[in-house]
Length: 309
Image (cartoon, rainbow, N blue to C red; front, side):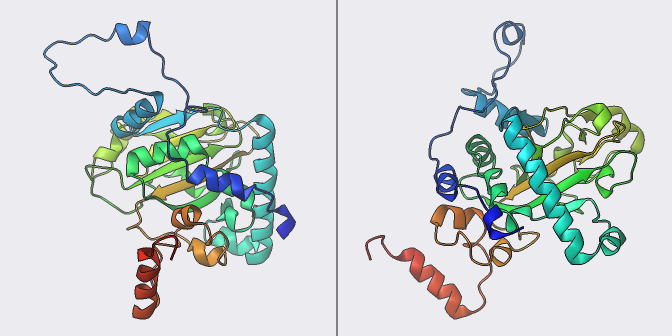
């Protein structure tokens, strides 16, 4: 895709990344009132208190492992993301070769689309999403990876196997290490291959027995333009697409800066956005390994200087 396709308003993105107050627009409220009033208990001396819808979403991720932010982008905007994702996949197939992509199981994955098209920066910098991620991980978060995931009808896909977005890890932590945000371009329903999750499995070191996993898995349904947000240690998989139409999504994985990016965004972006402190931090410029002792000390010196120096 040519440079002209990089049409995202970067100034707007910078303001989103620097957003200091948790936004409320776009944060879907939880059902309150009658449902909440009917939840009674006894013998309970301590209880969580979600003082905002954002806090309720964060609590749901901590407890069940996932939540859904509905209607983050309009139908028109979501359709545009679909067109752009199709173009990135077409371009990458031309670069690497369709046969070779299929050989490594990558035929239905568009890796690092934001490196090809700045429009995809709108997804990880969406203010309510970024606020939720920071509530779960803390203020310093890095975009660890961004991949377009295409789930075609009646075809095999590597994502249909249960996995964690921090794969091969069999330990649990008291706080999240990474958070995934799957942006739905097409409807996520049972018949289209909605993501299946095993609620609470981010608290378990080992994968459940097949019988138990099958009995506990639930589909996460969502409309186009929504984000399925989940703890990266939650076991999940793509469902079987029986709809006769493709189901597309873009997965954005945020992590603590101690975890390496899947693909180095500073290198893939060739320095783009490094001049903005907030975007540079989110994209991993500040946490990338230094190439030498002098470079490491130069970075530290630059950060220690006062703004007017």
